[in-house]
Amino acid sequence: FLLFSGAPDPTAGASTDDENCWHLDEEQVQEQVKLFLSQGGYHGSGKQLNLLFAKVREMLKMRDSNGARMLTLITEQFMADPRLSLWRQQGTAMTDKYRQLWDEL
Image (cartoon, rainbow, N blue to C red; front, side):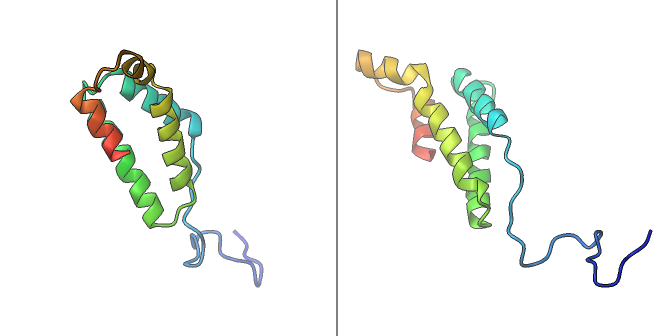
């Protein structure tokens, strides 16, 4: 292993001035949220969505530029949920679990 004079040490890690940012797999986030919503709050899906919300809050706190994008992806999946338009058309209320998730969002 050879280090050149003036070259940064590749094993040193990120600089304290570097932005906090990691690769966001948008497709995976969309699929996870769609799956959790399709489970209707059962099998721990509500808990999993709350963990995603917590991750978004953590990312925003760390000023990770992916935090806002992740929140947008989650919101888009909520808006695309077919039950939402069904409840609107029928004039029926959301289930308590679903309403709690919307409140968190």
